[in-house]
Image (cartoon, rainbow, N blue to C red; front, side, top):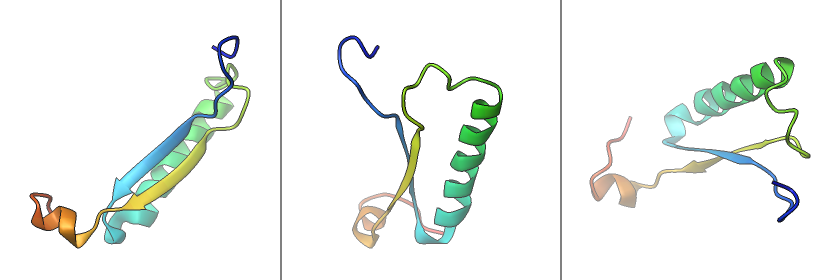
Length: 66
């Protein structure tokens, strides 16, 4: 993969504020478990876990809130 272009895997939890911390922790746990099992050894950089917030506008456009 890196012969073409270096990259860093970014995992994004796009969630409502009320579930942001839980979703972020869940992704971090998955990354940690994969790291321990050697599932991420092929990556040159540690995956980055981020979160974005779903806005009221998105909820009014058809999303569901907490």
